[in-house]
Length: 204
Image 1 (cartoon, one colour):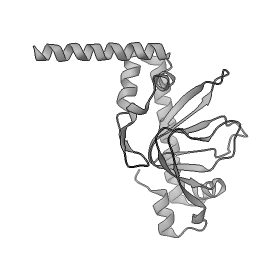
Image 2 (cartoon, rainbow, N blue to C red; image 1 turned 30 degrees about the vertical axis):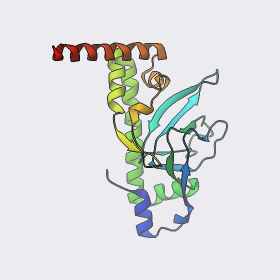
Image 3 (cartoon, one colour; image 1 turned 180 degrees about the vertical axis):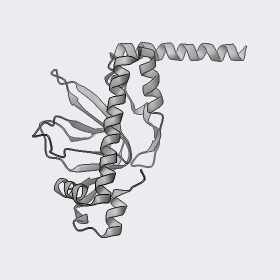
Image 4 (cartoon, rainbow, N blue to C red; image 1 turned 120 degrees about the vertical axis):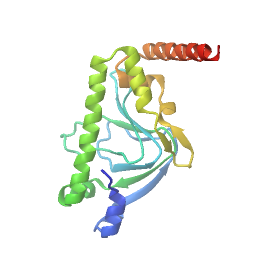
């Protein structure tokens, strides 16, 4: 669904549009983390963001890697059930929407409401597909799926291009596949070995 919220609001001269603030943030910065529960709603213009939570031991657990066009933050619909962090994986350019204003436009403007419903369902579907993969695929298939899913090229806040897969750590891949970091590392090494064997056969 092609829809640019920022351009739509600017074109309509929507009241409250001044409550959208541009941000430029360096790599490795936490935008929010527990126990913070009040956040703006962020839109990624350029760059990538890791979102996740923390284990009982305080270790980061990755939920998703977000790219340009994605939105994130706390809409405050779940009675305080928000235990999320958001960290920049690259230099980023963001738009920060005042949360009450964002909720207002996504519920009161039909075009925006339809677009936002589409975004939510798309994220929900992506989460369901990952859960299905965790429960149904073998280790090799899980890693291959993640590698394929994150091949997309993005531009960061400084104009540098990245392949999303190169921004993933082994622990990110482990979290997204429901495996251990050691298992992911083993599978990737086996994949590289097989690819090397195939190239050798082609050369001979």
